[in-house]
Length: 251
Image 1 (cartoon, rainbow, N blue to C red):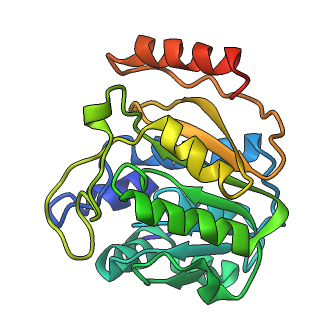
Image 2 (image 1 turned 30 degrees about the horizontal axis):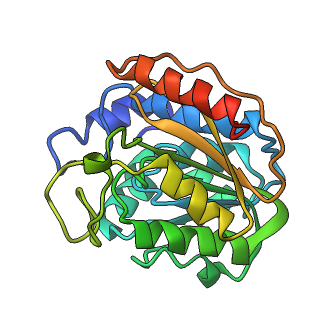
């Protein structure tokens, strides 16, 4: 890595290696989008962020640069992906100055850091995680987040009952699987899982690759809803779902 080498060039050098769990193309844009949505929901340099499934630091790269030293915490079960993020994606000087913290526990146990967080982030994690793991993450938010904290997560909605994932194992590439794929979850189930923990969940919008952002918090504060481009054939179906949610005051 040279000091002037662009982030995208660093990513391009990894194309002949193992699958990173994220697209090589638009790597920079996708990471910036994660930073932007956190900023729209109140992120400041002094915030403390818990990044679940931080992978090769696609979003973590931007968050680590933005946050004060010691503000970024990431959990990534794949030690190989995390190593690539720290050795290739993130500059060594940034790693030294910003002092991010990492852990590789596959249970997504956020208590390992012994801290309270202002933000939880789970981008493209609920598109692979079974329901019991999502509940573990929600429990971690209740236990390890500050009272005014925000949980931002993305998922793929199950439009039909048959699409709602009922398996109990991770689906997709991971530290112990080379099989690619994504799963869908019912928004109704997510809402009920949040309600059982006295949490509120709101639909924010669809991102550039078709995933839907959720905002979860303890107060139900109405957020700024970002306008992401819809690039999915099912975009109109989601907009109808979103309008239904508005009528029932779920967003």
